[in-house]
Structures are given as C-alpha cells and as structure tokens.
Amino acid sequence: MKSYVLDMDGVLYRGNQLIPGAREFIERLQAGGHPFLFLTNNSQRTPIDFQRKLERMGLDVGAEHYFTSAMATAAFLQSQKPGGTAFVIGEAGLSHALYQVGYSITDVEPDYVVLGDTPSYDYTKIVHAVNLILGGARFVATNPDVTGPQEEGIHPACGALAAPIERATGRQAYYVGKPNPLMMREALKRLDSHSEDSVMIGDRMDTDVLSGIGAGMHTVLVLTGVTARADLGRFSYQPHEIVENLNDLVLE
Image (cartoon, rainbow, N blue to C red; front, side):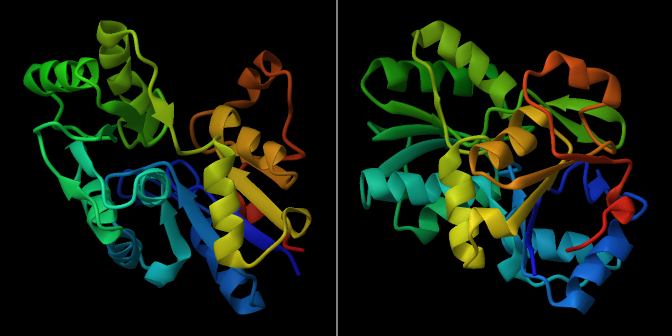
C-alpha cells in the first residue's frame, strides 16, 4: 500500500473553495487506510487552523496529517541553534512553530531573521530586517514560492517577499520548504514510509514535483493550481503522471 504526500493550495482548495474531486479523493484515502500527509509551503496557519479550515469545507482530517514549511523551518533552526532567537516577519503559524521548539521572538539582536508568507508586510519591517541581517543575523525563509494560488488568481508568496531583503543586503535567504529535501525527508519520517513506497501530489513543478523527484518518489501533477499543461515544456524534468484533478488519480 502506497503512502501519499499532498500539497494543499491548488490541490485540495483555492482560497476557501474546495477543488472538485478533492473530497472524494480524501475519502478514498481514508476508507482505504492509506497513510497520508498534507505537506504545504503555506507557513501562515497551524495544523489546527488547517484542520478547522477543512472542517468548514466538510472534510474531517486530524491535525496530525498536516506538516507546514513553518514547522520544517522551526525544526531546522532548532537543529542549527537550540533555544535561539528570531525576528519574525510572518503569521501565527510561523510564530507558533518557533515557540513549540523553544525559540523566543525578539527584534533586538536575534540569531535569525525568519520570513514567512504574510499579508502584513511593510517598509518598516523590511528596513529592520535588512539592518539586523547586516548586523549579523542569519536570513532564513520558510519557502521559495514566488506566487501562490487563491480564489481571485495569484498572490505574491514568500520568495517574492524575500527578494527586496536579499537585494538590499546582498545575502541570499536559506529556504527550508519544498523543494528543499529537508522538508520531504521529515514528511516521510512522520509517515514512517520509504520514498519508493510513496507518492508526491502537487500543482507546482518547481516545488512539489521537483521535491518528489529529488526524494525518489512517484510524482503526480494536478492541473488545478499554478502549473498548466502548457507550462510543462519549460522544465527539464517531468512528472511521472499528470491528472486534471485528484478524482482522476487511481490509488495503489
């Protein structure tokens, strides 16, 4: 029996709208007893937030099935400098994950400047982040996505928010989320599954499919999010399988 790792934005839902086929697919996973984990580069929400979001859409999936780039970032920082400090530009999901591993959040001489997805992004925060990094703080970002899907179309994501800070400091952020292998390794560890027995499902070639290929997994691109079929020619690598939506995917 295969284990399944799924992206969320653009795969299960867009904004607050469930994507057709998603409900039936999750119900098939649950009915068949397949191990599965939602692996999202969205750092704004906690697992409980995601659980409740899906509940409002009519899906009952426990909090243990969610792993975010914020959680991966917190685990990485804790492995690098246990009990460290961070100046955070991000939402509750990121702050909560850092607190959970024993980090404290400060704007005075932090060990790290940590950036995640956030609509609360302004010039003052950029200036402060730049000065902290030039003063010695290391720059870490939750994920490299430049854009993400939403109901109205596309919104700027963490990679786009990092760009002004990178340009002003001349320092490249270290991106923890997909396609960084750190995040996929942690996901498979949580599933207690090997890569050859696991399937990665996502809507982005540059994060989801790339991370699955790098981990040696079977990869599935769903055409309900960022990457369209017409975009595939731009990539030197290809997914193992392409489906219009989740309901077209046959479980193994």
